[in-house]
Image 1 (tube, one colour):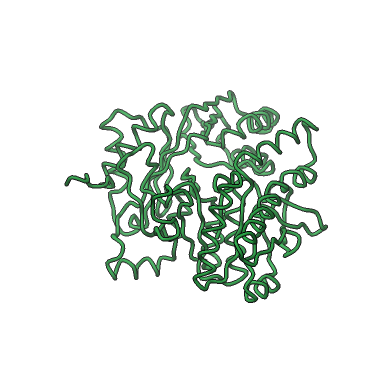
Image 2 (cartoon, rainbow, N blue to C red; image 1 turned 90 degrees about the vertical axis):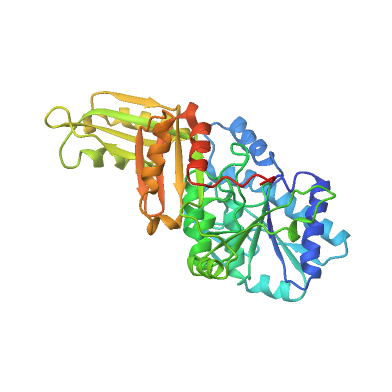
Length: 421
């Protein structure tokens, strides 16, 4: 079971979480719980680091920001004990959660689950801080924002859990953001592939890396809410959304438990920025000169378009980067101007990426055509397109994001039927 920052914000909410956990343990389950820092706490700690030293050492940054989860894991263990449950906290270095790669964005390499499993078999509820681990040289590391989801899936894999329940401030995965489309529907099940695409293109429900790990390790993940009114059914009795393999999804469809749609969901992401390099030499190696320095700086490039050169031997190259990395990307490209040989560098951060995702696209033609036609009918201009086997993404003007999401949600028949109908 994993609880996010909003679920852990203060002793009252921690008590509510403790009751949900205790209920699962009372039902005869062996339970491990992964917790995030209290809502807003990580931001507060990050600001302290910046005030102390603007050019902070990532290894010391990890020492500071990992403390948020240490506090909530101890508090949840104490609260569970006050309710009569056996509980103990395990910090990242005590398990240990072994990590590789850089500080502040480490990746989990391995978790030794033996001691943890023995403790759970003895009836103890294990409370584990998410987001943190241990490097090869014995230093504490953190996994990057949203890393507690990854911690939870990794722990579930290490102990061979039947399921990994991720409690969050939404009660499942919806066909799109319910704040934009009131008729968005909660999905009973989504495949790993679909969730990976949805997470990578802006659906904020789960961190991308956690879904990739669940897929690799075959961990069944359920997304559900820890926020329900006092008079409502307890959250753990309300089914959330199961994230499962394609084989399990096909079984659910055959049993009539899940309806198969060509399109599962529509995601949007306003955190993208567009970069255009004009009059790049149209010759082998020119594009490599653009993207190599960005790759070395760990800047993710998403959509890439190379226009056919207007003049012989020259071309325009357009691509997108995360908005937070735009300034660094711009500085790197200006630094490499002579190597690349472009004429002008133009940037635009007022763009959005809209994506249509669904495993059904593999076997059904016309999904992209429906998207283009629906947007054209509303006069929404498409600036760039990328596709994968189960996704079509377009870049549009940021101001048209909500309209585009609503139009596409209706175009693919995803709107929930009116209650009166």
